[in-house]
Every structure is written in structure tokens, then in C-alpha cells.
Image (cartoon, rainbow, N blue to C red; front, side):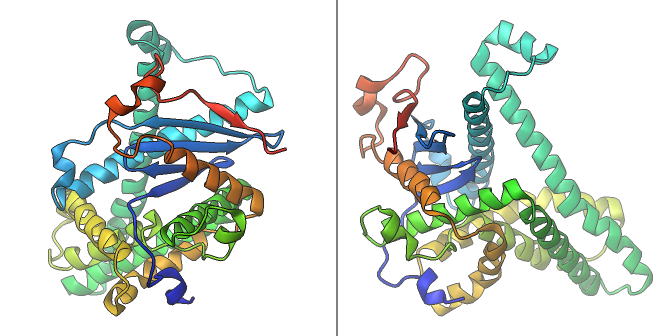
Length: 339
């Protein structure tokens, strides 16, 4: 892995980020969000909108990390659900009958409230799964190791290593799935496109192809930071009984997420040797979560990037009122014909 191609010296780091979705890419440029999805006829379906105005709390170091993490989960889950809906409609899949709770919420509060409800439920389920498998399970399993040693540092180290191993095995296993392989290709396309933009090159497939699929500000690196920082912090907590260990892990999660976010931001705007060493585990993990994209997948990432930059650069809602729709989005969904 050539770190000089990842931490490009003359590049201009930005806060633009993204996410791979089903047959597409979401790009987020400050508050401006765009989702591009490839349709079966080769056209690109694009949706773009402005996110809510960020509160003053998002500017406070460390606190902004927790807020950003929760916001990313909500936006990420919403874009995934949207891309799935676009593909279902494209393939002519009939909409499933809505459940009683969803129908009740839609009747009382409207279809948007019902959709938001589904997003938050999906986020809650994913959080419960993540916390259960990657936080609680390792400390429960390592409870058996207390029969071998009573050294608190050793036991916490074993727990931390086990947590990382479980996470890597999980990523490796899902990476073998056909659909996930394509998602990881779009993930690679997203990174190549952001590299291309941050290096001041025209957003074309040929220009983007030359860059690596790995990026210092990737969410995968954030997760690895979380794992490593959790290992270090938990090592200072001793080895109390199982209940207190679980509670301490849960209570310290926001702190760990905040520190990890600040480290990720620092890594994204620096190319020093310390940053490279600190980022290396996360970059290695990205080899599992990104694949080399095809040209048509790079087209999708570029379309999403360009769409996210079509708003007024100020990001001020008042400057974009002429294209506001009744639903509150800024420009309806549209198609790009690739023929």
C-alpha cells in the first residue's frame, strides 16, 4: 500500500464525504446531499436536497463528533432505503403492504413521518446489533478469561483484540456476498472521485481512475479508530464485574466516538508521518470495504458529486428558494440519459 498515493501532498482536503448505496453513490457537500443510482436502462437517477441547518453544537470539538455520528447514521440509512426504493420501482417490484403501525402513523402524521419512523427504527436496530455484537459480546466472552488471569490490563487487552477480530471477520464475511461486493465497488468509486476533486482535476472517469480506492477520511477508518481507542480507554478501567463492565462500555461510547471523529478529521487534513502510522490500521481495513470500480460505477460517483455541487455555494436556503418544491426538497428527482 503506497501511502503517498493516499495522503497526496499537494491535495486540498475538503469536508465532502459520501456513502455507497444500492447501485449508486451518495455525496454530501456540507448540507447539500445528492444520491445517484444506476437504472436498468443505463440512465442515472439523481435526487438532491438540502439537509437541515446545523446547530451551533456541531461546531464544538468532541461534541460535534457524537452529533455527526448520529446524523450520518440517519442520513446513511435514509439514502440506502431510498436507493432500494428506486431500484424496486425501476424493476417493477410491487410495493409491499404497509404494517398497521406504519399505516397509523401515516394516517395521523403523514407519509413523511411514516418514512422517518422507518428510518429511525432501522437505525435503532442497527445500533442494537452493533452494540450487542461488537461491544457486549466480547466482554461477555472474555469473562471466561478471568479464570486464566486476574491482570486487568491483560483481560482488557484480550477483550479489545477479540472485538477487532470479530469486526474484521464480520467485514470479511459480508464482503464475499455478491451484492455487497458491488456496494464496495461503489465505495471505491466514491473515494476515487473525492480524491480526484481534492486534487483539482476535472471530474472525469479517466481522471478518477488513477486514484486509489482508499481515503483517509473514510468511515471505515473511523470504526477502526473506535476499536483501538476503546481498547486503550477500557484498559484503565480495571476489570469489575460483568454488569459494570457492560455499563461502562455503553456510557463511554459517546466519548470514544467523539475522540475518534477528531482523529479522523485530523488524519484527513494532514500527511505527516504520525498521521500515517495512526491511520494505517483503518487504511488496511478499507482494503476489505472497497473494491476497484468499473467505469460505469465511476460515472455514478461523478454524477453524484456534481449534483451535490449544483446548489448555491453559500448553502443558504434563501438563495435556493426558486427551485424549492412543495415537499421541501431542492429540485425534483431527475434522470441523466447516458446514451
